[in-house]
Image (tube, rainbow, N blue to C red):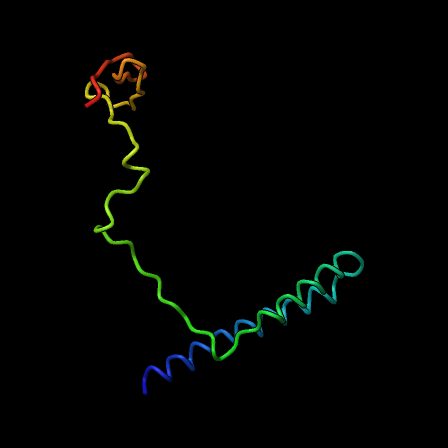
Length: 107
C-alpha cells in the first residue's frame, strides 16, 4: 500500500510543478507580444503535450558498477612521467616522452 501512495505523491508533485511552470509561462505570454509572444505560444503548446499523466513511471537511475571494467577513456590514457609527473606522448619508435624531454619505454 505504501508504494501506491508514493506513486500518487510523485504524480501530485509532478502535477504541481507543471501547474506552477504553466502559470509562470502565462505571465510571460501576457508580458510579451509579437515574435516573442508567438514563440512563447509554441512553447506553451509543446508543454501541454508533455503534461504529466498518472500512468508515467519513474525509472530509477543505477550507479555504474566496477564489474564492467575500466572505462575506454582511462584505458587509453598514457602513463605519467616517473621523473616529473607530466603527461607522456607516444613517439614513432614506441617510446614515451614527456613535455620536459624525459624518455620512458612503453610497456
